[in-house]
Image (cartoon, rainbow, N blue to C red; front, side, top):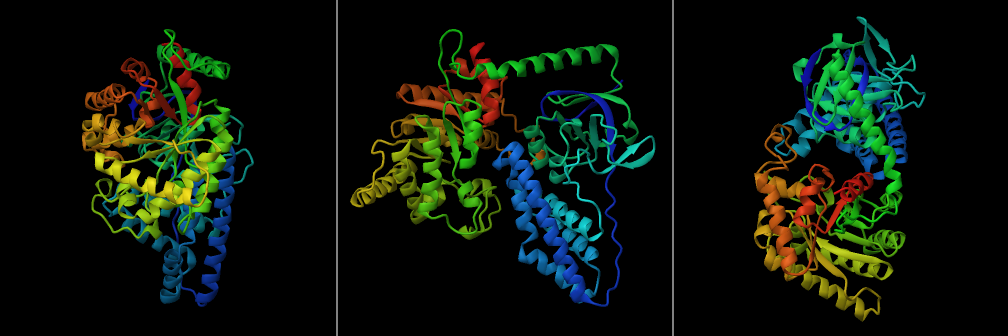
Length: 559
């Protein structure tokens, strides 16, 4: 038995035969062409075909996993349609009289190097995106088959017994995939019926590929580095997505133990549907409100299907991120009203726009910042550009007449910020009264606790608002001074740190001293290893991804 330790990406145990994906050969020959215009036409046709393929891929992902998981491929399509990208490719063809394949590869390398050199880890991640979309265009130009085809096979080169075969699942068997790396589009196109789990030499837990693996429910491990060995192809392996361990040719004891744990996990999952309609309370009668996080109105279907009791975080910034110009008050009102009406009496907590840091929108015209995580973002934009903020507040107030809406302010660090936001909210209310427009006069307002400053000021903040919701992703980042978008800091950015847990405890205690409720809407809310801790601390509400609702309810009911 050979044991490899990697980084846990997606929990679960997979047992099966290894199939190694060889790195695709993207060699491109440089050729001198006589007709640059014809070559530019070839590029445009290939780009249009690639955009159509991405549209199909996006629709496939949206249909199976939800709209919010498909947004990456919308970004890929926009990248291909970007005038700067196309202009550089066509300029190179015209100037150097080179073939389209070579021009695309050259521009991809240029753009990827530019992104990789940026300070922002979010922008650095775009290097992989531009390489991914450019490979798709090159494949079209070279006449390679698109692996978006839904024919039940997994496309790509696999090493088997020293030979290269195309289509690793042609024999109908399911396998554990080993690869140097996987692009997001490659991961999304894997046939889940024929893939048991993923192991990659490169990558991080926060990559797009990792997020897709979790969405697809595939056990996955990344970062095994030099332990990646193509000769493992055909061998039996066990991967433990929770611990990050890989066992190649497992001994009998390891195999038996992993089979037992896998069977227990599968039995546990089969019981989850029976929890629908059950109250979320402990054996001692402690009641917890169990809500779900969403990014757009279409996510409500998953919220209801998983029996969440409300929406604890509606990330309204996605209404801005998915547009090329400012979303109007009417556009926002329609979106908020739709969610409120579909949720009925269930609470819908909508976070005001949290643009900035890793969420950039061109039409905001934000200046470049060396450290955007500590920069001009979220409530800071709203308070310094109240004309933007008031449009959103008016839309939220109008929608509150159609359901149980509450407003939540992100990135709060002081009492004055809350008071300034409430002042603008009162101005919006006054305007709507003058227009004889209905809204909920007693709409609740809360703040996200995601900075050490807001924890220290929690007693004073609690006197100003109706509830707290702890954003553990940013709270961990700012408490431990670790950029959560930087893969090399993963070992230091420990959300289980006693410092982070003490911050959470202090926040809950301050909320209860002032008679308001306190919830958690960050990733830690779904961390089942901490559920008992949160219950002992007296947490009132947990808001998680829709698919995490029933597993979390099960743990709470067994506490």
